[in-house]
Length: 485
Image (cartoon, rainbow, N blue to C red; front, side):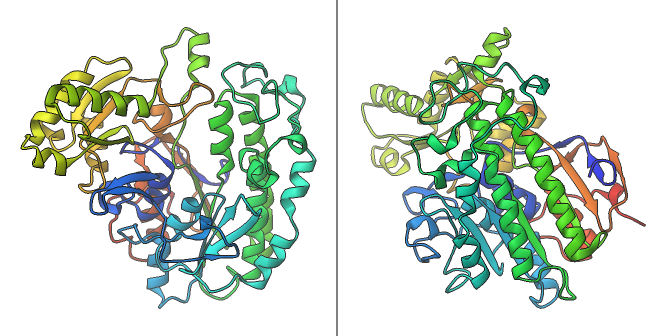
């Protein structure tokens, strides 16, 4: 893909917090959370006065399983995706299907009008869907589930693909700041997955074999639905969730992560070879990107005399409520701290005849000098705040009244949210927002650029290649250099 495709070497996410659901949505809508509405994996929905999960939908039922894992749909997504626009362009003759271990990673890219979205049930070890898409699983999906490929991957355990001395981009294997599987004394190879005291169906998510299984399933879907061989353009979205799970556990400098990407490279090779054989080389277009990046583990930074610390949202929530209760003599003024934002109880504040502005100003003053906090921002007054242009752009692109909080806590660089071991993501710093972007195959001119491109440029570029309408909330621009004349 690097040699024969087109690489955008300087591609960024221009909103924050940078999480999985907004990332997948941004790629396929060409838009930002302030427009497409997916402001986090979870958020506080003021209209419902409750926390909500991005794709949870109790009006639908699981298909292929009996658990609530299947009660999912794209109903909270406010815009179309590029997959929707492809279907609209030809009176819904195209097939569009989303696939990911994570429900949100399969559902949100595929959009509202998808023929199907499939995600993985870690309880049963099966790929499932919901009644939003279908009444029952196709026979070929049931046949794939019956093979129990998970069992084969797990029983073989996880050892390094190469000699351990060849992993020169990683730290030593045994590091205190890496997490371990349930039965392990240390986070080191060989990982005896077959002996881990956890369901193998759940365990595979946090191994590189979750990606391998995902590509196995994607091949089955392409074959079972005859995608790309029906005389019309089809679209399959494939999200590799396991690199995220492994990264959270071990951190980006671990041998586990390096080995996972070596294996992912081979999985992608196998998938492209499969497309060559079934669809035909030159007859398909592929792009590869990421929904977010990741920070170095705090322990890794400390080991190398780099700054880094950990904050905990539950402690921040308790502290915010406590100081407000002391100042205003009223408990319960804070509903939640989530997505690095403080969500205030507007009803109680108004009923108590407090001024919302006064409450926010008190929190801003209190947390401005707190450990790990760089800035504290009133999200309704971003334009009046002394920020860099980049920070202001990222905050504006994320803020959506009714789904966003009131006060944004901007962490200092290398400050992680809730992860003492392993790592996480969610800031607007380069380690979280600088993402890869490669295009390969049909309609793509080989080359690269170092211009500043953005995640939301992907969908309009795909639309230009396909000569269709861009998604209805799109704010991105076409990356012109990769288009064949």
